[in-house]
Structures are given as C-alpha cells and as structure tokens.
Image 1 (cartoon, rainbow, N blue to C red):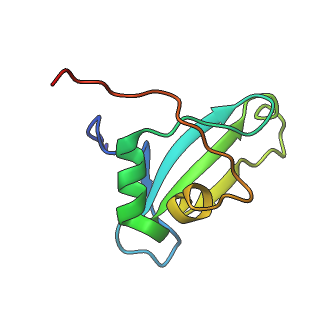
Image 2 (image 1 turned 90 degrees about the horizontal axis):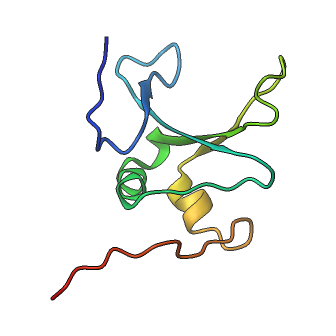
Length: 101
C-alpha cells in the first residue's frame, strides 16, 4: 500500500499506461457542482509546473458522478492548459497568506 505525504501536491500516483515501468501519472482530484471550478493550492501549482505532462487534474462533477457512463474531465499539464490559458479559464485571487514583518 502506498501512502503519500500530506504535502505531495497530488492525491493519487499511478501508471500512465500499460507500458509504464514507473509510477508516472500524478493525479489531483477536484470536484465541483454547477460551473466547472476548483481551488488549487500553491503547492499543487508548484508540483504541476515541475512535473508538466506527468501531472493531471481529474475534475469531477458531483451532480453527474453517480451516472454509470460518467467520465470526469481529465486535464493533463494543467499548469499550461489552465493556469496559462486566459481564454478558456478565468482566474481570481481567492485568499492571501499574510505575515507580519
């Protein structure tokens, strides 16, 4: 059984395909209801930026996940395809980390 450290930056480590010889798919699972949206931590973003094509977000619609044929939206390399994509995804600052000087 595999246990990931709390700060790994992803939820699941898996194989990218049958030919994979190493654990090469890092999966962060996010869920939403209504319009596709999610919170993404600084650590998750950093890991996605470093791991690039090995990093995936599985975006799960809670309203549809019980349907037998439902497949979540799978986003490979979300650092580029989401964070650097201003056409398809809107971003806003949701919180700040504040430290007294």
